[in-house]
Length: 532
Image 1 (tube, one colour):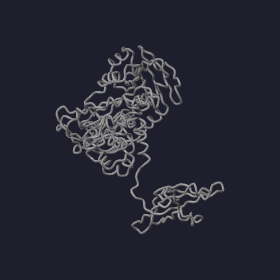
Image 2 (cartoon, rainbow, N blue to C red):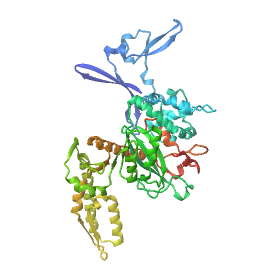
Image 3 (cartoon, one colour):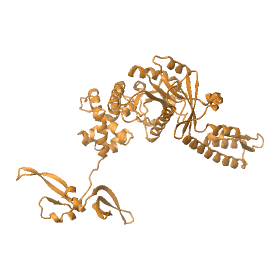
Image 4 (tube, rainbow, N blue to C red):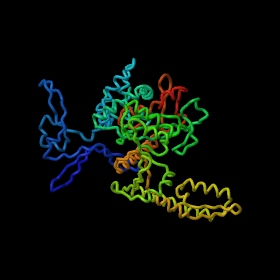
């Protein structure tokens, strides 16, 4: 390992940049250099400024003094100075490097949100002097910086981080059983945590909670459903992950447009989306009081009965929801007569007032281009595939299987093509349905929204709905990014509280993840009690 100097001339002036470099010998006998540490610029005119110093105690003088620490080839002018320490660069080694900056920043966020005080009061040290509040801080910092499983935190990440140095602790914070057991201590404080976080967000960011985004997602388990205990929440239901063969959980989430979570619940896997909204309306009202809030939801979440209750409540609960395509068919004649209005750059809207509600038909140029490109790509592939299948001489059953595979790969394009298969000869014929193609082109990149916010700017309404889509994408990304949902359940209130642990930091969305059956340990009654 050695210091490498890089000279660069800029505006007639020479700049020197220094890096710490390590030689790595290859199997073939060659050597490559690995960049270990960048030290920055050191030039002659600023030599005194750039010198690093170490403080030592001079026993003879009875006081502390500094010794300048500087590379050997830069010390000729001060070679007789007793305060200069000459370095043997060839003998320098880098021992146990640790990630410091990200860990320090996570700790700063933790203290700014006053979570150190909050959890110190609710998670006192155990009889064995386990600092549960510090264990939780390690878990939250890990989820924020480099999310993964608790086992990876214990085996790899903690030793490469500076969490022990920053907390004045040791490896005991990353002991495996403590990491899992910590989750079971959090559920009792879920409501208090969200109330505390909302107050801190108001103080720090001047956040308001007038607009709430509500969405649902799911996570599945690769286990045998017949082996699950009676009354377990893991059940078969509509699978967003295209895995109807696996039992799942449904996760409901309420966040602000800025991404600040206000509430969540983990529901049985067979829960219908339309049956969850009424519960969350009462939950938010009970915890945060009555207010004129705007709920932004996707289609399929609210029912007509719930929307009527929202309009009739005091004060009225306002909403913005996506609308099924079937309603667009009924309103299309009325919308054609309306002029397009420019909401913002690239977004146009048509407004239709009907039955104390406002329908917003929005058209995004970017979405039109994206959806049209996706449809063209699918249609091009499907057309070529059908041409190949038509030239094949195979049995009818085999042809049906191949057609089914093509349909599953290009479902959007399949709806635009008429396919016929002769029962006797299994001859395949296909043609393009131009009427359906014209309808598809007319609706690409266009959305019909429904709201009782008749006085709001259409651009603001469109922005709310775009943020709802962003929340859904964020959840999907997190669900697919991290391996293994480790749930530890043994006795008492310990159980599947991992999602609560994800939110305990207040600045990181939770991670619900997939799990293989042999990695999941569940007490027969504790999973449902934990509700996570």
